Length: 205
Image (cartoon, rainbow, N blue to C red; front, side, top):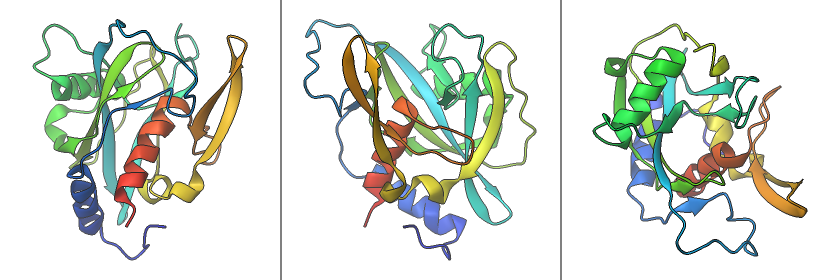
């Protein structure tokens, strides 16, 4: 558990320390070791923003609920982000651009803290999570075609490995296991939960 008397500065110092620890790439297949991946697979680069914001003395994590009209992963809980475009300088630029487009977050209101190791998704993306601190209040503006809702959860909630559970679904005739870390009405699972679990593990004493 994260001590509740920690200041936001303390938490950010712990995040920076966690990011300095060596760690390998994670994948959507971590809990499914029997899956054999082709060696010649091509992964498309992507960047997502893991946005933190302080509200009334509490550090909170900003997440989105994807539009129910999307073809891929409709209604799922996600970080703002997407594939790297040709004009993006790097994955950090991608994460900031996507956050600006998806939730109306001005890039100049974000201080970049660091990056987590890349994560391979079942949709063949190599996704780099970029952790950033939102430095000023902002009113989210969800992109109607992509985002149904923007909400926050206490950062402490996703920093405790005890709040994560492993569940499974049938996919292509097999059981596929994945992490979940539900919060209220929000079912956080899949790649989003896996990335948060990776951060929680690295921030453990």
